[in-house]
Length: 192
Image 1 (cartoon, rainbow, N blue to C red):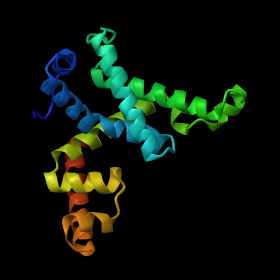
Image 2 (image 1 turned 90 degrees about the vertical axis):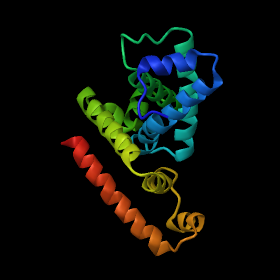
Image 3 (image 1 turned 45 degrees about the vertical axis):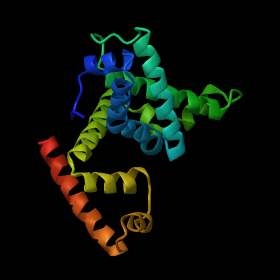
């Protein structure tokens, strides 16, 4: 699978009848865009991993429908930005539903995650940080990438990872430290 697809290529794959193309587009989006759901729900909204995964699945489903019915217009925004908007709106709707319809707006406003109250500039900076991190993780070798994803995003313990890899806990810890160092190095290159 190529490292990057253009928006047009992704739209064409999602709209095509070719199941392989559709699957390729969905796998690409999962690899590159799923961290956005984790960031919105877990980091910004103090939510749980299950919510992030459910949010991602719903947002992808909506995105595919909107792309197929022509709602997404490539000249107006990037597909990833359009997807990010879907994620944010779905999370806000979920949060509003959780708060309940009886609460007054003023009470609800005080309970919204702080990330929603920050400026547009800060949100754009945060989005770029998330994208840089996702791109940096994608640059790592397969072993490091899997270890980082398992530990940070799938929240597996060192013990679980060591059992899966059939190595000692200390070996996993050392490998994790080396992988974090590699990730820092890649991020430095991205940010320079």
